[in-house]
Length: 543
Ligand SMILES: Cc1cc2nc3c(=O)[nH]c(=O)nc-3n(C[C@H](O)[C@H](O)[C@H](O)COP(=O)(O)OP(=O)(O)OC[C@H]3O[C@@H](n4cnc5c(N)ncnc54)[C@H](O)[C@@H]3O)c2cc1C
Image (cartoon, rainbow, N blue to C red):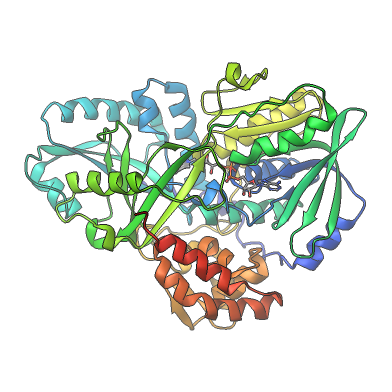
């Protein structure tokens, strides 16, 4: 039986805080003031945003700068699982699984409109697989303890077919069902940004950090460029954290002027590809996990926002493109593996969108030539001789634990005074500040449910009844421009709504309409043609 983890913490706060406007001119005016910040965070993905929220809620003055849009990097391209990681359990990494299960429960509690439980079926075609996988998953339940989302159970072949609707029946012996979580990664990023802003942090997208300021050999701030006006910005801060994911080395290299030692790269990026197909390929509300594909990796088919995500791959990459291309072998792998398990298997013609994310994998210390300190096998925090703090690796699910750990390093290094303990464990994110019923599963088509307790505020804006397509209304576009930092059509169609990821052709067809509405809100060129080109890229299959 699934337990509903809907927010109880939020019951403490009966009214949602009115949304804070994100008018850029006001944000830039604030940034221009000669303030000495406690903390400057570089990078607005899960890691940087988690740090900004943790620090701001402890009372530190915080500025966060993101060179593109929030979550434009890896943090909008995940498999959308908020999970303990059954793969790590198989590797015997119990402490990591334990931490991730704790964080899973925290996200589901603090953002129930954006992170929800999801049942996974592991189909078994050999009898031994059922007790083998079952035993591991019962242990997973045990590790979750009171934070469990539902009990592992065994399903016979018939029941597996009935539940999944489109599973290959020949040779099917049954399946093991267990519970984990799924989420909307980009919207959770925006919720983190907005919650940090409510706690006083100043966050700005489209503001690229170009240089570090050193005083007496120590990092004391940064220079950045407002990408909309080209204007130069200077920020003074006691502590600077580099949370730029796969791009951390470029920021680390900015320290070169401050040291005569060579700064070696620490990141070995690896790309993961997902495809999105119609719901008919997985008609129920359960996900499928294949624990051992032909290349040994886990493959997921996940019902998400009315479509099905299938992925992912793991291919080393040497470049750090903002929009990496998928390789033909990766698409072939996903389609071939799907055909091994799905009765009606998707073909190239069924792909609605294909997208790529880069994992920030950290090389072992001996390769990097640096005295790196590995906090866990999952994420790395290192402090340079000039006191630049770099944090990378890990996974979305554990962003809060990573933030906590990064700040702990800042305290230990004397970069920030240790203040009150972290408050984020029981801190409802925007949209979750009123108790709410999670009646709308994330597996179903998108809509107002993603706004949680702000749904009424969205609907009070002009155009609430004006459906644009794919669950998006005119009012949602206005809300994105006024309160969610959206500047361009891409911000709305890729990350405030997820249409680019769900159905790139539909997203392309909405670009002009969305652009016109957004322009009314921001007064800015919404970059419609640039988005149309990007949407074509997400429809383009590798040959
Ligand atoms: C294919 C794939 C699937 C995954 N699936 C899952 C999953 O299901 N569940 C899970 O828990 N984890 C998952 N992960 C891991 C998770 O997505 C990442 O660990 C996480 O998103 C990394 O966040 P980040 O903030 O460190 O990096 P990013 O999200 O990449 O953020 C870094 C930001 O820094 C910005 N930046 C770079 N240079 C500058 C500069 N000079 N100035 C200002 N800003 C700058 C970038 O624009 C970027 O937005 C997956 C990863 C991949 C690749």
